[in-house]
Image 1: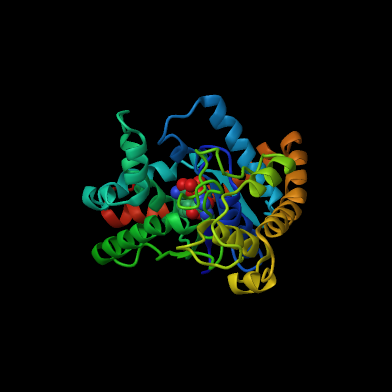
Image 2 (image 1 turned 60 degrees about the vertical axis):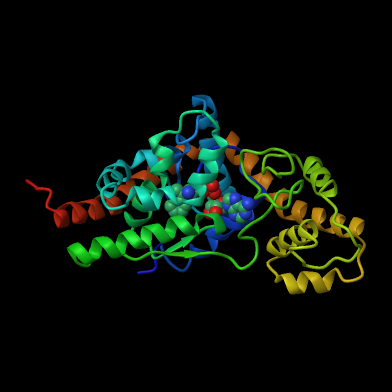
Length: 328
Ligand code: TYM
């Protein structure tokens, strides 16, 4: 089986990083196999969020999925909270992942550090448990994600090994699929920091208008020297722009570097801005149409009923395996 599953959290505004690292790639899998793409709305609760913001972000994300070319007939698009098997399997899996390994997760360490003295919810700590449930419920073989989620998928793999060793061949082993180019897009104002939904400076949001996107790219940090070359140590800003260009155009970094040899920084930035705008402009138009239409609810309803069939079958298999009594 070649099932593909991925998800995005509706926590903040989607960035160019989310687009190039994940979203853009989902549709490629539609023809080859079964694709499940969901909105991790329960995961969005792991950091404080206003109810209205969560609702808006969730609808936005469905519209972005559709605008990216996902076809709801071929891809199952649904909300995590609409399929209760996620929460049930989460409860079971809590007993098969350990506090020590959860406390070593980079995302947990980063986010809990950012929380400063605020209370850190148990959900943030246990984030990868629910994520393992998300993946394993669908017997997913391939999980397309950006760089920062590899560690969580690895933990889901550890869980499969642990679980299957004890109960037999019950869970399917997933594998993270990370693109060579664009798996880690950095901030335009601080290329040592990942572009993320919670930081507005230097991050391109998919909802930014085209003029703002151009302005942010033109204002990106300029490294010393004048040559456009990929050199992470000495030219992190230029290297990030080369990555953005290459990921946008689906070419390698070497090809992008060759193309820009002899360019000055200013013209290079302009070309990167042109490429990003050319890519995002039709995408944003489709988003605008979808968000104003009435397709979203129907897509989510259909998606949830399709997802439930697969998820409930897996949950039943797991419950039987561990000895939870089934009565007819
Ligand atoms: P999230 O919502 O943080 O990010 C969604 C996807 O975007 C990728 N990404 C990036 N890629 C390149 N450069 C960046 N700067 C960048 N920032 C984010 C992420 O790697 C991700 O692929 N835990 C997940 C949601 C989730 C999930 C799952 C994913 C929940 N359950 C099961 C896959 C399978 C998350 O928070 O992604």
